[in-house]
Image (tube, rainbow, N blue to C red; front, side, top):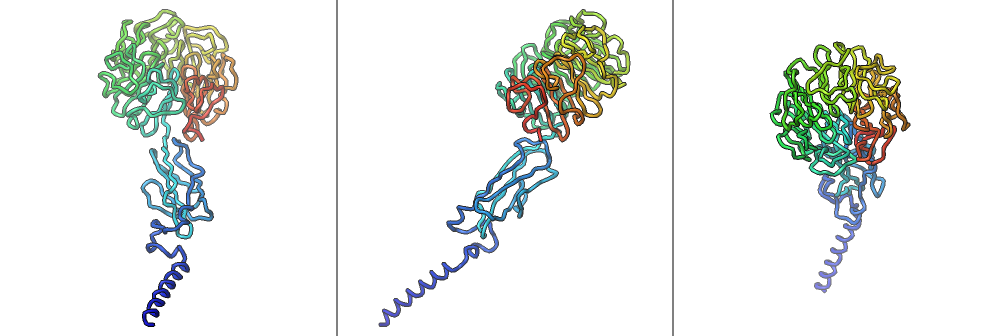
Length: 484
């Protein structure tokens, strides 16, 4: 009897323990208040978190909003940004004043003390645009932190990302995630000015346009020979490049068949050479297709190189291996831009003058007759803040933030919703008031509008519009990662 009673006691004790386990709430089991340890329960696998809305992988905004849900609502949520601690949050969760660079957002759902052990995570980068430059069939953007991204044609490595594959979205230039202060995109090569005043180039190099002492193309940046410091501005033409020194002289290198590197010869050079007669007092430079122009501190403009179309503006059509004065521009010039076979100047009055080839109306003076001296652009006698000359077209940005273009338009480079040329300036659709920069490329253009949004229009056969397609557009489209 005593043995039987002892066995019954053990059985009762076991039943009591089992009953206590069944009657206790699951949220009371765990390790104190540390909810991250959760609870070992079949319900745990049903608490999952999903991010439903997020910023693009590359964003031009210092704000980010996330929307998220759980699979077994209602739930509580905890959020975490970068190295910050987990904090309670609700959807949508917005962060403001974010720094430029890479960020990671994490969110986890919780219910009845059970927290998702695999938080939803999303990483993105904030890239604030400082400037843009449109080249022959590619485009590049410079971030405010000095990083460089490019997109479009890459057959010669002009995107600088270590490949020769075209990209219709922006890609990082190898090794240039910061530290650059200016960029310039040429026909099939690109160059960047470092914060220390040095120059790096990449892309096509058959004529020495990379300036590194050889003629081998490179799909990553290489140092320009002898220019590790002392440079304050750069400009790339089709196959040649020029640099403005801190002592206000000019050095050029690359293709020189028409004398466009300005050293008195027609011999190519794969290292920088001095431009004849321009060792000081130069304010700005601009390299075009096969010619180059310089603005002196006195306001005088000089050009050199090919002149068969009158693009040197000196009243003749004879090419020159050394700089010559542009007729009628002895003072009062604020900026210059050398295009394909024409050139333009922004006057101190805010007006624009152009000269050279005009078959497609790129001089903007209401006719299609070429001119080897500057002519006034119709309707642009004042109010213009900057200019940019493309291959067969030109564009201007006014002080109100509006953009007008004129000339060739077979690929939609005028951006006015048509495909017809115009020999007078026309408004670019949707960019009449909030643009801050304009750059004309070979057959496309790009602009920076409000909030750092980049918009491009025109030819897109190689992805130079950056909108994840290869279809030309006669109205501006948003570059991926730089749109609203």
